[in-house]
Length: 165
Ligand SMILES: [Cu+2]
Image 1 (cartoon, helix red, strand yellow):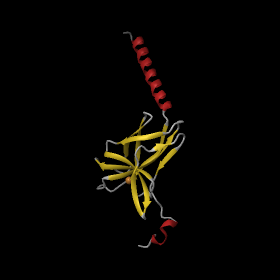
Image 2 (cartoon, protein in one colour):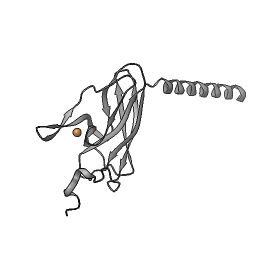
Image 3 (cartoon, helix red, strand yellow):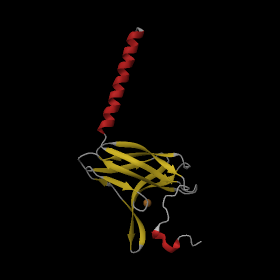
Image 4 (cartoon, protein in one colour):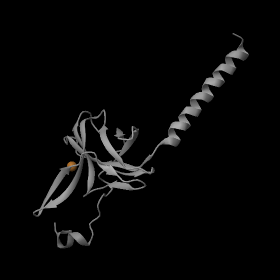
């Protein structure tokens, strides 16, 4: 094969792969933003994950599963008050309404990353794969934020408990 032909072929394959990549990207019905996880002490086996997930399509989409190579399993929970007690309730097939979004944040919906398999430090990332019932899978990275960065500032809610020590 002449160099000319080889170059043409390489260029052709390259354009094809670029095309298919952008096609896949354009078809995505889901957008995930601000994905993060608060750093936990090294002995902690369970971490939390937060993010915003938007459904850009005209149909409801459910979250089927979430996986990470760094954790045994991942569940989606909601924190609720029941009889004056904080309780976490597992959410199966969590729905994201057409053109809607859900926010996973401290004190509400969250991902529970269970049974840490490798150390996770602030400044690193946790790879996650989310699968949805529309057939899409989305790979994201949770940014692990140091506990020095205040996640919850002491506001009026803490009242007299603030600074009492
Ligand atoms: Cu939880």
